[in-house]
Amino acid sequence: MPSYRAAALTMLLSLHRGALGFGLRAAPSPLAAAAAAARRTSSGTVVYSTAEAAAEATEEKKKSAPGPVKNLEAYEKVKMEDIVSLCKRRGIIFPSSEIYNGFAGFFDYGPLGSELKKNVKDAFWKNFVQCREDVVGIDSSIIHNPTTWQSSGHLDGFSDPMVDCRETKLRYRADQLFCSPVVLEECGTTVGFVCVLEGNDDDMKKAAKTQAKKLLRESDRKGQKIRAFEFKDLTQVDEETMAQVPSPGSGSPTLTMPRDFNLMFQTNVGAMQDASSVAYLRPETAQGIFINYKNVLGTSRQKLPFGIAQIGKAFRNEITPRNFIFRSREFEQMEIEYFIPPGDDVWGPYHQKWIGDAEEFLKTVGLREELMGYDVHEGDGLAHYARACTDITFRFPFGVQELMGIAARGDFDLRSHTEGSGKVLDYFDEENKEKFIPHVIEPSLGVDRLILALICSAYAEDEINGEKRNYLSFHPSIAPVKVAVLPLVKNKEPLVKAARGLFEKLQRRWNVSWDQTGAIGRRYRRADEVGVPYCVTVDFETIEEDGAVTVRDRDSTEQVRIPMDEVIPYLSKMIDGY
Image (tube, rainbow, N blue to C red):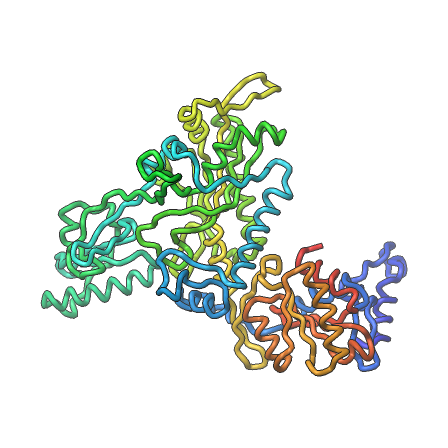
């Protein structure tokens, strides 16, 4: 906007509303306010003098400018293989021990992945601990006294149903294998059974159709129509049916009946390796909170209701780890045990409040709302001790799965540890002069699952000037690299020196990258591919004329020019929100 037009617009909007017939002062629009705080250089470039003006201009440009043409169907077409390849190619996640052909169920986080993981954990901690007065944190040990797991029920009941293939010796989780009879549409005759691994509906139907065609061909019924598949997992199958269900490994009915498989990793503590030295790697972080309940209550001066949060590693010897980092044998959890008074009329509102708080957190870190849903557990779907449990789900490329669980656990855990340890884990209500064992609301979230959901949510494609662009639209607060600093050329010493000075200042605040090689457009694309939300370009005008830099927004590709001293305040507002 020419300077005289900006001045005229500002003057008009600053008129007393009485002159316009309203009797009040007219409030300037955000764009007009930004224009008032802008100046134009001799080359015609608009420079915003303050971070606030530049931030307002950026938001207004995003709303008004057409921007890149987004491919709204990009995620619908993406496969899990694409996500795995992207993570490997861009240094987010690698298979563990890859030079030794990997190790199933274990993964390593690369340069970008480790930053992303740190940011996700920091966001959880800031939201649920730092910004709340009623939640405190702990960091308990990975190995507890083995009696902990006896009291909690893990030694006897922490298991998954397993089936073996007698021919190939492969093992499967029975609740992740689904079978269906192949029934002829015309006469209702059952030709046989198909058996497929759990996945999204389309993939399961596709695999089942392939098996059904083979079955029809072998029974001389090629081309005959069949009824719709009726899938049920192998935990619901009797021996007579199991004798007809083909194994995914052998293609023949060679599966055993389901049996329990304990998921805890066993180890030995001390020099002796006998029954007295047996211990376990924790399969969840929750028990470390419960056994420290009394310590925290006595030292933190908390009153009910209050919560204890923990982020830490957990280990489960999964029968068939699958779907990348969604189900692995070593993972991290972010859990809160929120202690409340007992009573049938008490837990419900707390449970609903935590469901709302959990959903809001997931959206603030960048999960796409349209990919989220709910799964309310009822009847046999509830754990024996739970009063209620609601899962927040996410639609991954392999189907809709649990992302975060919010359970009303009653007083089962504290009561079990009271009985197992002989120590009373109660609470004295000073106001009512009574003692009781508190009940618990437990929000539980896997770090690795959330990272996978964030990568899926961030996967984006669009078109700029006819050119296709693939990028990761991470929310700025969790993006692995917040800013890329780009000197326009690398052979102009004053220009590179100015850019380097800014880069080193930004390093003290955020994780930033330096890129001085290649055309500026190509460098923008490199930053977009790994989800960098902002690029700062230092050019000839910076050192010769206005002392300002160009800041480019990743998603909209809009640019604003601001003084170098205003870069950190501007980025702070755009990244941190203040």
